[in-house]
Length: 200
Image 1 (tube, rainbow, N blue to C red):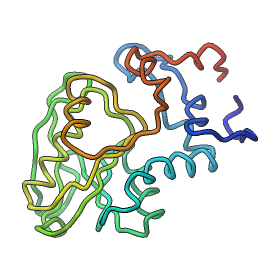
Image 2 (spheres, rainbow, N blue to C red):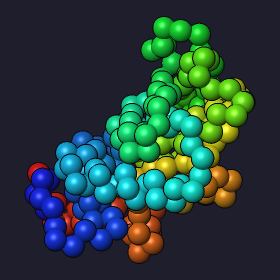
Image 3 (cartoon, rainbow, N blue to C red):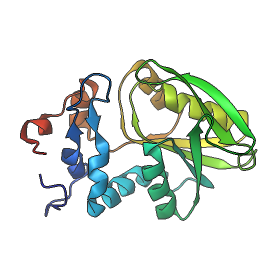
Image 4 (cartoon, rainbow, N blue to C red):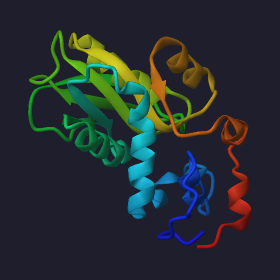
């Protein structure tokens, strides 16, 4: 599908076929969801699907995780009319921060941080990232929010894989993702049938 094309039938998740397969080898994620952001209608529909389950929830702030979660998180925040908080990789903020160590989807040990002057008791936060594979990154972000006394209203991502960490998030927090039930098994097997017809 042409990256800028918009089909007449925009069923839930239609934009997932815009995602590109990995062509660079095992050190990279198995697909590139960011290709769908190039299509303005795809991005709008993706965000609409992500925020839909939270319409009746009180949300004060949207937090996006460095780096691809910034794109979706800022789009979600704008759609909801809320502020956006960047959850950064350690060392990037020039103000006092709270830090949290974690292991990412590649198995690497990392640290993330968040500024201290925004999150506090009573603040209700929607956490957004592009993709949840092992769940380690999102779990660390949840810990940061909760350590500072704020409340995690929910977690939103294009996909949440049914790994141990992904299941933990689904069992313990309200969540939202864009994957129709019939595609979840493909997501969990790390291969989409749409890749067969993918053209660069």
